[in-house]
Length: 135
Ligand code: CO
Image (cartoon, rainbow, N blue to C red; front, side, top):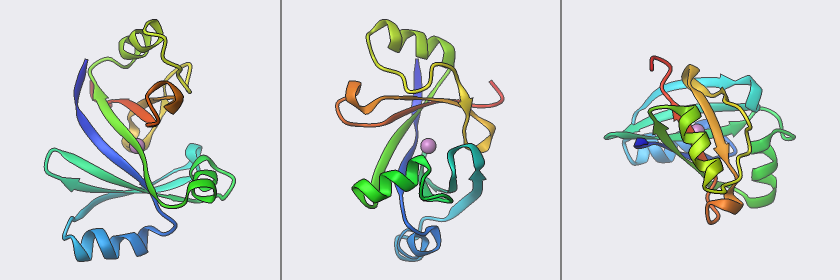
């Protein structure tokens, strides 16, 4: 069902500031930047081998990442698994009794269809399931 760990989302106050650490310090290059309006967030993707870091900077303090930063501060925000079939993965999670934040897929970064699982049912980790747009 799961192909790979697609990315690790990290909530930051400023992508430009964070790039000083991740790009300039650690030498991980940024290969994509995009604003995702629906989630009130600007994103930057940094490739690390087979996976990526996704830096998340809120565009609105009242959006989901804005509120997260206010409550918890900067840090690891979610893990994203790439799945072959998003609906099938959501059904399977539902049948296993996991709580889904999204009852149906929504649009994430890079035009991918995504859905989130509630951290209460995944032992404290916000999980994003994502299906590549070409699939
Ligand atoms: Co993500």
